[in-house]
Image: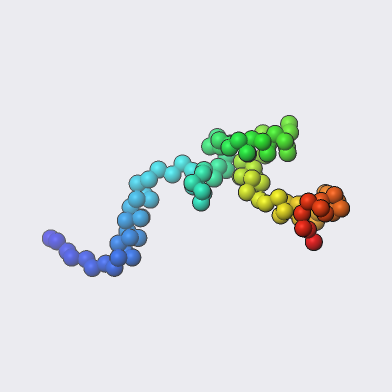
Length: 103
């Protein structure tokens, strides 16, 4: 027995997306830029910039830092990072006064 089902375009789109998502294997979360949002070291393949951050910023502790933290540090702006370090009294305002417009 055949049935005719009336659907709006939006409903049809939702059904198609649901079917595609169910059949698609998801081994990882996909970020906005298409990169893996790796939460475990097993899935993590660092970019050259992330490798540089891990080596220069964390030194011998680079393997102890979760990948999601390194991805966050890669994306945060220098100005924002500097402001936060000043707020934590980790760097002196006078040191960076000429470099950034920090209040």
